Image (cartoon, rainbow, N blue to C red; front, side):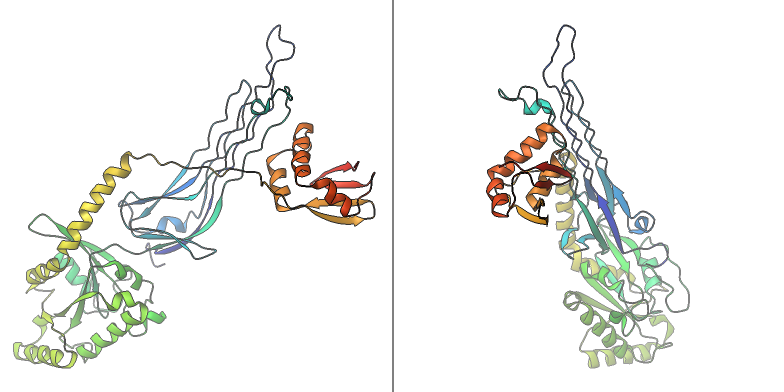
Length: 440
């Protein structure tokens, strides 16, 4: 991170817990024993990431790194459900890649505006006791606890979405060029690394179209290893349609334009094979600073030694600038128009489309593996993942919930497993924090 530009940050997100179901009974005049009317808990809020054109850095996440959605409200009497927790919407710039920090898995590459990614789902609310009434259990004192919401550690990586990447050694005139051809307001001075954050400029075409140019700073020999301003900005030009490689043909500061070109190319190729295949326009800048015959000799030398064509301009005087813009536009216009059509279509479909989120729910395992731990000759504990899930869903200290848990475990062979483990009548058996006397 440099200045107010941030292109990689880590954040933590916590979705909301579902509300607990309620245990309550109707209380009406002249009705001595009303039936169960406990309502369900509300679902917990989820965490959603949305791409937007209104942001161009991740700098906000320098100051806020933890995001929590609301928990769902608990259920109420009269079968009233608890209110669902509010979702949290996190806006990031278009071009942001979202990774799971623990696994480094790419969750989504948000290349277009108005894309949504659900990164943590809220937990489902628990059922109230009104849901448990049956012909044989008419007064159920049982309700479900809400399910915990998901939580994740995320890495956000911004790759600027620009059509043109402007590259070259420091002081070759990139800032001057982007100021000349676009609406960008940039600092220009005669020392290396004037530009310490990527400058973005919009270049308007007479036909009404436009394209975005990114001035990528800090490229020197060894940049892919972190030298100069490092490789922190190289990722931004992976998305560009075309690279404009600026060379200082005046040789006032550096002696050999061909050597400079080759070294920068090596940096790009060492960083990413994607960059090595990008369309490239090589531009000789500062032609106003040397005599015409000297210029012609250097252009010919560049062509002979590199085998590449090079286009002469002066970003300072504006010479050949319009021709350069036309040349660049010819390379990107087709792709640009297709992207605009895609974005417009996506905007129409996503603005009106309501996001549907399936909360994290609890489904009891049909087969629960039961393990028995022997603490001493008369004390045992039963454990297992399926048991832990039951205990987080139901309150074992409540009689009806306890019976439900024990019945579920008995269906999975609890009695035989305890007998095989040497548990005798009268021994103490723990499930969670609840102890009961074993009676076969």
